[in-house]
Length: 215
Image (cartoon, rainbow, N blue to C red; front, top):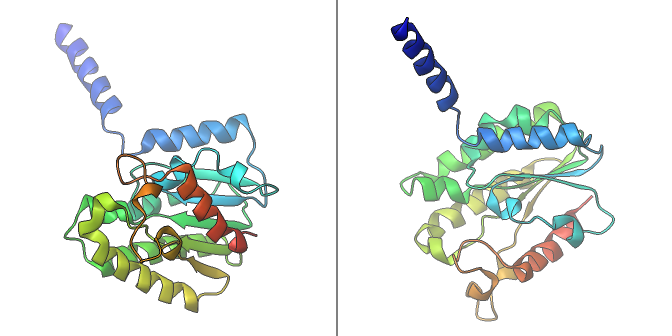
């Protein structure tokens, strides 16, 4: 009897344990959508912590309806893994993506073409569901704490920009120049202490660059 009980307990703990990474974030989104039906024709933000931490994003774009579905730490592989959960519940008029720097942080040996391929896969998933809406990609930012990865990031930005240029209803939103000082150096004052995430002023700069692209 005891061994059967132990077996059941064991099975229960194991079934509880191995949830895929970011599973809880996705459940939180589902809960939000249950509590409030997502508005149609909104601008859907998808990506990593630069969006997650932009909790007051709606204040930066008055008159725009925004659904923020950024989850911190996510890589393009995670956007692909959860694509159904991130796209199916919504009927947006525009999707803006910020993701990619965690892919390199997670694996500095990663080839640029692999990250670009991950992005193209996600882009295709969006297009399969929403053939005609506006889809935009924000360039990977050059965080001072990840300076060793800047060369790969630069090349990735260039390749994704070239890809987006050929696509219909697609734009590459480059925030690089706007985050530099007069001498072309990355402005460290736009980053919080971790030198990875940005300050409210940093977000103001993003908003200014993004605004012309917003539907």
